[in-house]
Length: 307
Image (cartoon, rainbow, N blue to C red; front, side):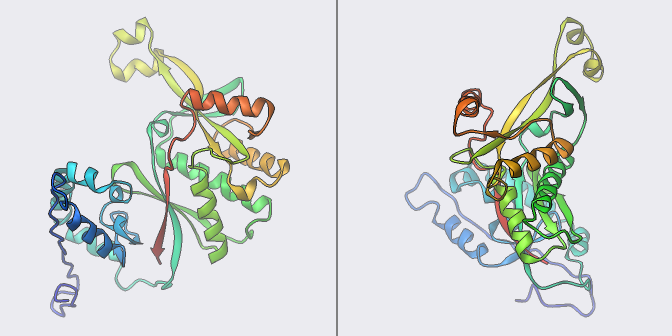
């Protein structure tokens, strides 16, 4: 209570609240203290490193959403080092709280995604057989996926066509927060749920669609040159990075899947949605699984933000 009181002599006052957690996984009850800590922070909102106010344990660190207690214990020194650095950034914390700015006093759904290695390769656009690669950062790639989904949901009448915008913010350790801003609550919820479904394993979904990437394959000349010149002489190879499942909201018919494919081609990558329950599509799914081109575990988490 003393920490969060206003100081009339210091309008820009901010403070750090520390949780001291004992973790000893080698003992039978050595993780009980972490469980208490997790329950505590699962009950309220807090400021995140990207300036959003999030409900749950993830407001302390983005990695805590996915990491189990054993993983946290193993990497406690890394978390501690980052917290010691973060606690010095008081000016930045004050700015992120945006005290005095207008707010809506409502919770909205958002999606948090960890960008894997495929988001660090070159993007691919064009048509199959005539694809070209270009540099694009992970945030821009994720923005493209959001725009493809938004356009498809609007084109199929699943959400309204009123003005709204995609928000993408970067957090620590390659985590990104994605949400729809300016739409009504139902549209935001459908968008967030559908976006999370795009990053799920393919387990019963009707359709899947490829996302291509371009990698650089070394040759004898690129091996001799410094890294800065490698990209100019290395052979450029276009390949499927991963197949994404289509969300349920856009899998009701072949027509909906085709609309999503058009939006995907425009914003993300070449490729056509494939029906996976029979024929060639069933075979393609089996081949994709054997070659590691499907998502093995959920990469997106639904979060609640206060706005």
